[in-house]
Amino acid sequence: MRNLFRRLLGNRGEDTAAAYLKRQGLKILARQHRNHYGEIDLIARDGKQIVFVEVKTRSGADHGRPEDAVNDTKQRKIVQAALCWLKQKRRLGQPVRFDIVSILWPDPDREPLVNHYPNAFESSQSGQFFG
Image 1 (tube, helix red, strand yellow):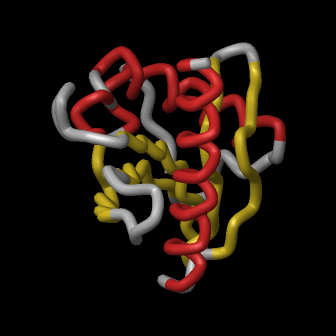
Image 2 (cartoon, one colour):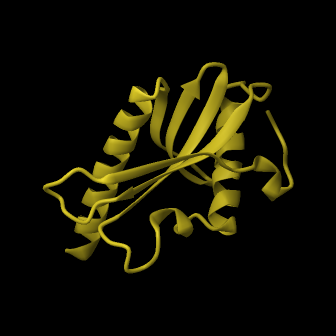
C-alpha cells in the first residue's frame, strides 16, 4: 500500500512539474523516458536547449528536502540516460541542461510548494561533456 501511495504521489508530482514547466514556456518532449541507464522524469525543450528534468515529490520534509535526494550517483545516472537519449535522437550537438523540480505536498487537498532549479547540476560530473 505504501509503494502505491508513493507511486501515485510521484505521478501527481510529475504532472504538476510538467504543467509548471509548460507555464514557464517549456515544451514537454517526453515523460518517464527509460533506457538501460535509467529513467528521466521529463525531457523538455526551452528554446534551442534540451532540458532533462528530475522531479522529486515528498509529502513531508521528515527525510529532508526533495531536491536533496538527487545525489551524485543519481546525477550520473541521469546524465548517462540523457546522453543515450541524445544519441538515439541524433541531437548530440544540441545544448542541454539538467534541472530539478522539487515538490513538497504535505496536504493533498491544497496546492503543493513547487521549486524549480534550472542548471541544478552539470553533465561534466560524470566525466562526459556534451552540449
